[in-house]
Amino acid sequence: MLMQVETRALKSPKADTGLSVTDITDQASRLDAFDNHERIWLGRDEKRGLTAIVAIHNTRLGPALGGTRVWPHENFDAALTDALRLSRGMTYKAAVANLSLGGGKAVIWADPATDKTPELLDAYAEMLMQLDGQYYTAEDVGLSLSDADYLRERTRNVTGTTKGGSGNPSPVTAHGVYLGLKAAFAFRNGHEDLSGVRIAVQGLGSVGWALCERLHADGAKLIVSDIDEKRVAKAVATFSAEAVGADEILSADADIFAPCALGAVLSAETIPSLKAKIVAGAANNQLAKHGDARLLIQRGVLYAPDYVLNAGGLINVAGELDPDGYDRQRVLKALQEIPATLNTIFQRAAQLGRPTNDIAKDIADERLRRG
Ligand code: NAI
Image (cartoon, rainbow, N blue to C red; front, side, top):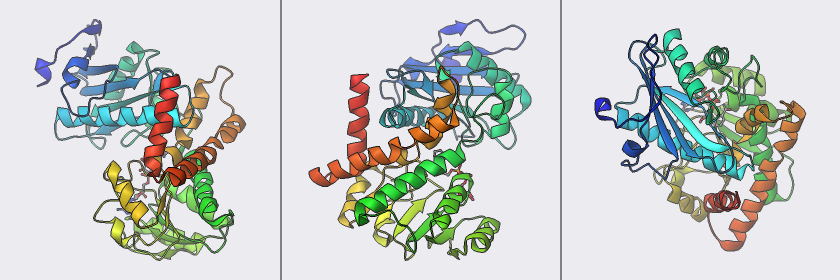
C-alpha cells in the first residue's frame, strides 16, 4: 500500500540517509477519520526503519503541537487513522484551554520495545527538521522523556524535554486534574473540602500517583487499582489507600471516580455499575462513544470532560513556545483556566440540560471560529 501513496516531496530525500518526506493528504482524505485535516506528512527511511506520519489537523490558532506515539498498529491505515483522530483531539484540547496552538500528532509505526533504535530516532528528527515551524512534538505512548531528550539534541521542534525544555509534563497534568476535580466537587457540593471524600483512582502511573499525593494531602480517602501490584502496595503504604481489583474500581463505593489509566472506560456496558456521582480523571478518551455522556446524565453523574481536565501537560509545554521563554509560575497561573472553564461548562450544561462534553466542544468550536 505504501508504494501506491501519491507523493509530493517536501525536500529531496538525502542521498546519505534515504529519508523522504511526502504529502499524503489526498490518500488520508479517503479514511473515515479524516476531518478536513490541513496536511498529512509521511516520513520514510527504509534503511533506518522509519515509517512516521505527522498529521496536522488545524493551525488556525497557532502551530500544531502534539506528542509522538510509537506503536505497532496492525496495518498502515490503522496507524494513519490513529494519527488523524489524535491530531483532531489536540485541536480541541488547545482551543478549549485558550492556547495559541493548533492540533497535530505523530505516529511512528513501530514497536517501541524492539524497533526504537537511535537510527530510527535520528531519521525522525530529520523529518521534524524538514517540517520546521509546522509541527512541535512531545512524549506520548511509546516515546519516553529520554527519547524526547534524544530528539531535542537534534531538532528544536520538541517540547517537554529535560534538556532545554520544561521536563516531564505529568506532575503539571496531575495538578490541573486536581484543580478540575475540586471544581467538579464544589459545583455539586458548594465547597471544595475533600477531607473524608472517597475517591477511586484507576491507574497509579505518572499522573495518577501525583494526583493521589494531592488528594491524600487534602484528607481524601483513596481507593486505588492498578495492574501493577507493586504500585498498588506502595499506594496502600503511602496513602493508607484501600486496594481493589482492576475490574472492581468502577463499582467501588466512591464519591468521585478518577480514571487515570486507559481510554474507553466509560461505556454502555460499564456505566450501569458506576457508583460515583462525579467522574474527573486524566485518561484520554474516557467515553467509548461521545453519546455515552447521556447515560452518565441519566445516572445523575457529573462528567468533567477529559480533554478539558487533562490539558495541564499541554499548557505546560505550550509555555516553552512563549516568546519570553518558559516560566513555571506563569504556567501554574494558566492552570486556573481549567477550573474556570469547567465551571462555565457545568453551568451551561445544567441550564441547557445538555452533556458537558457537548458544551466543551461548543466552546472549542467558538474559539476556533473566532481565531
Ligand atoms: P502511565 O503509563 O505513567 O500510567 C498508567 C498507569 O495505568 C500504569 O501504572 C498502568 O499500570 C496502569 N494501568 C494500565 N491498565 C490498567 C487497568 N486496566 N487498570 C488499572 N490500571 C491500569 O501514564 P500517565 O502518563 O500517568 O497517563 C495516564 C493517562 O492520562 C493516560 O490515559 C494518558 O493518555 C493521560 N494523559 C497523560 C498526560 C501526561 O502528562 N502524562 C497528559 C494528558 C493525558
